[in-house]
Image (cartoon, rainbow, N blue to C red; front, side):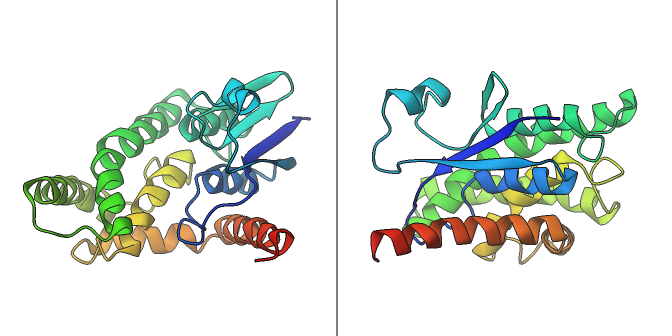
Length: 217
């Protein structure tokens, strides 16, 4: 039996709740019905112990026995080795899912991350930088749209590729960035209707809400 501990922040501000990337790991663990514990590190004190697990001072990381794994994509690939629910065992299916894991984290998240950061910060000034990122994201969505219009999930059965792609896209959807990409939006709706996602998100929100209570806020 795997000995899995997911570490996230003890608290984050209101705006990113529901989008902190430990949710990707919670979602995968719930999909695979793998038992796990949740541990916390201080949001405001990212010291040596934190950096020994996550050298950029971010979350999440996962420990599995004496293994410590950071970066959500790497964590999900590790969990895929533990459960065929997350990553197909046959070479063709595994290859297909793995390709889309990297597509989500590189081809799609590359433009979506700065785009959503601009939105979170309320920057929409029509500057060349903002326009470049907006056009870059629209191009990626244009290419992704026919793929998602033709299939329910990226690699046949639902997999870690869908957890990552849906999580990347749902942040874009938060700011109406999928308004002209109906297949992408429908895909996000399908993915986030899954019971494992619903539970993972609720658990993350509850985790930070408990921190609010402890802080007296």
